[in-house]
Length: 296
Image (cartoon, rainbow, N blue to C red):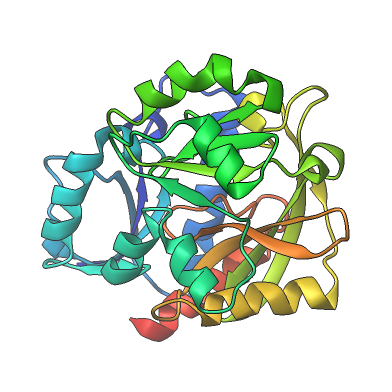
């Protein structure tokens, strides 16, 4: 019987070609695996949609680099419903189902968390970007799918481009709900901070910066990662976000941005398959391992 199975996706499971990007993934995987094994746990690694894997033979699974789930969303939901009956999911099934759709931002906002202002445009909406921009009194916009990752189908639209981007927006809403948000200029200037929380405690943080001329901070688009020492206020904000969840996540990431007055806003809460930058802080793997050991 396996104690913990680390979940990845097929692209990162025993890859034929190891790029620097994949090497980072494999390195973090091994750091976490080794930390768990030091606690006497039997650890396995597989991809979430492995048809031959018997999930009843592992006590728990921890979601890691399952970064293709939104491309196979219906299949993933079916797998999730099946797996929850066979093993313990970390984070829990309830949290994963809640966090998988960015409508969770509305729940957190209603719980008193200052989130980036968001307008939820439903699938097949008849509203135009111009309608939404005028209604919300926003100039430059960012649009993104309610279910996505890694800036998939995420676009920055300047005010004078809105009319030209209406067709793009309508095409996107044919198949999905979309989020419309005001563009925070500070993201391009200062970046976005990510604070890692393990077992209810702050672990470490990094600052993601977009490359010149872009707004997307992900390294997929040329973004860079920097050490970051968050303020006490920022740490308290991240912990408050975790406490506002439906139940306590064992691990996760709080992404924050700032407005021109340096007020803190929640950009996103990542508690399904967050990149945790363990490679930047290898000792943090021990914190996750200790938390998992306690609940098994």
